[in-house]
Amino acid sequence: MPADVIVSGTLRAACGLGPEVRVAMALMMAASRAEDGCESYSYAQDIEDPTLVHVFEVWRDRAAFEAHRRAPHLREWRARWPQLGLGDARLEVVTVAAREPVAPPVMQA
Image (cartoon, rainbow, N blue to C red; front, side):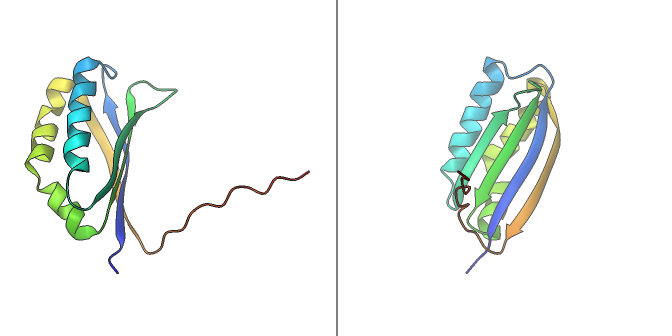
């Protein structure tokens, strides 16, 4: 069975997440989520630092992730980063051998 691929990390929004940046992010998320093999794709603004954006993606396998990396919408998105004030991406790819749900914590009486 192919291993899941997780991409996680951060990027910087120099001027925060104004309307133009939010619209561009929403379009990127929608296009990526429509790709075959995309299980999750999200951005989240950091609570303490409004210029820090957390990135989280889950792909069915390496082939789906590599297809995403070649997608035209990804190239267009990255080309817009300078005008949107985005940069300093610090992302890493993790290949997952096994996945299991986290059990709820045991509550002590």
